[in-house]
Length: 314
Image (tube, rainbow, N blue to C red; front, side, top):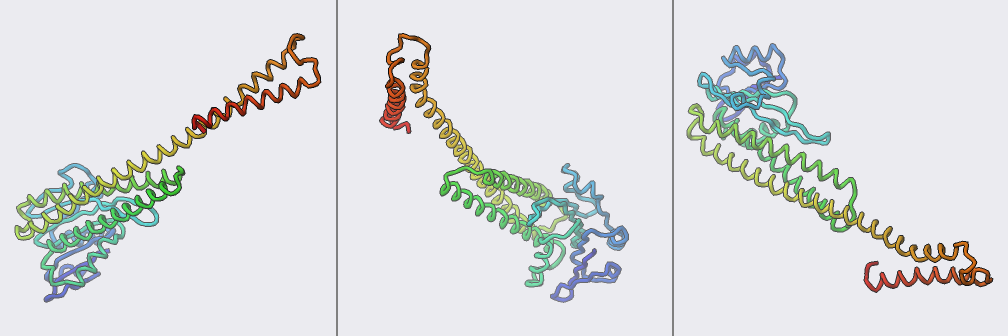
């Protein structure tokens, strides 16, 4: 699918037929979403550009993430997609050529849909492809910030659960682990965008009057990175609290078994003594001997229990 956005007066219009690309004037943005080979080749020929292969887009080397060629800026960045099915990263390729933005991606993305909505609200702010690129990046960062706020609310919810229940549950540990993974992915994609935008900021082909706007976006990314660090620290604290509760529960169980063992040690000793097959043991041949031994066993257990109570061990 190819979406073509062009400016007509003060209005941004959209064309979905890629064959109209050569006829459209005042082009500002061409968005390729899972394009066919024919669509990709048509855009490359009509606009005199060249898209990277999917393998090149996902490369992590700096030379693959950002480079300049023939007055064209090429940049690749990973976006994070979070939904009910989970989370995953997907690469997005940017090409800025003659103030026209070209984006290449696989699959649908809410970020791009939200960018189009914002454009419709204030189309007069879009003068060219550079403005579309900045708007797209702002929308992506806002989505990442919303995700971090959602993670922060989940962390607060887990903290309250641990405080109120005071009991460790396996589900809590799974939730903490999942939030740590999402936060790590958000940090990774934010660092990736920071590295790419720093390269664009140094580019001689990027308009000077838009670099201040780009610096503001970089500051927002830095704020997100600080936020992710804060969430990491909270998650680590919760994890330590969870492990502390587990250790406390284990200590309570061990304490119970220890107390029970010690309580039954004196009765066991008395039973062992009276159970010896010696004729000299007192009360062995007396009818009240059994009750005496039973009374001594109960008395020894009570004495141990009272001693533990006085020491406040139980």
